Length: 478
Image 1: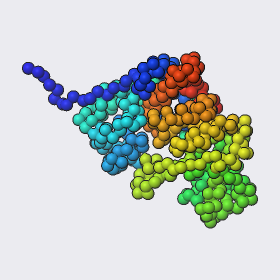
Image 2: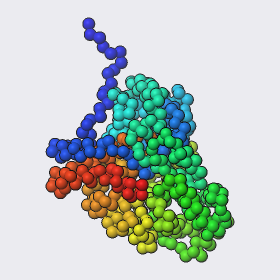
Image 3: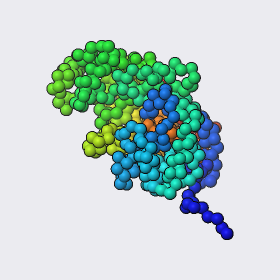
Image 4: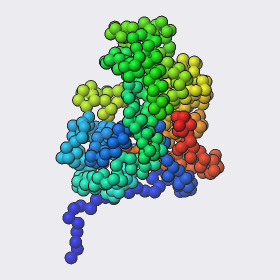
């Protein structure tokens, strides 16, 4: 008599050794050889959104849903697009009751097919298989079994945040922080002799540069209180920002991050900037005045970077919170930020005219407008010593767009003008998966150059190693 399984046999979850490598056999062999030289190098993550208090408390993760599903808007937005309400996924909520966490996980597994062909699928396969030892492809039938398997691992000491950070070989991890933050978590981590990684804050001043936004006045007051300074006039406001930048630097920060609607950097005369600031503090600023002030302040941020050395990263061209009802119900960073076309060449000319050749300025430019990489950003980085090309991010951090980026940008600006990979994620366990994807794609790209006799193998090995570790360390002054 034949004994059969009581449940349908699940399809295997396979992490193929040659994933993302070129299909042509000779080039694939070269890519394998290149990849092996960097696969175990430490991860340098100079821009991301992991909460440092998670590492400080080092408490066990509550459940698979809160770790792998809730914080990852790449995942939740695709499920929402296919008909799943965000309420079913715990978006915008804190810790979920076990029944709701399990139900959200079932929804993820039952809708696994929506991730086919996406980088989300690649990252998730790598997380489930590479970290938690899952060998079955998720489905409605095995959802509870996989939930239990991951939950059991999360209860083990080896799967607490600090142990995973070490297992992932993360050497440097940058967070994103409000300029009024006291950075106590960063100080505590830096003072802990048992903690081996370097966790650095990032100065994110966007809300303080947008006087037409709700709450701007209160935010400036809070910033001044944090600096113990008077921001009653424009000069005091500048001194307050400069003081908080110094505070961040004293606590390990190496960069400031900026994300506005555009990167126009037309400056104002000091008297006009002071006049607009007074109007804003009085609540009488117009939208046009506020936009002119923010564009002026972006140039001021570059001036401050020349003075204090903070790397300036710029992530423009996103219409934030596109769906008002989702914003009202779930808050920001919940999957409904949509790219818009962005111009760089004319927009940055005022800033680069003033500071583009300053030896202390590192300006890293990102975009979600794919054509802009080769048309504008790469040529700017190919002339200005201060400008570096940021990695493809957000809607462009997928294999197809990364390959286009490699072929177009590298030939214009050269490998030395690239920032190295940026994971830009809140999803902690996706960090090694994202960096592994980048290393495999870079190995494949350089293997093609070797196969075409455009590079020797030793040059490709050196170039790949530099992209993985040396370049982000140099660009972000680590």
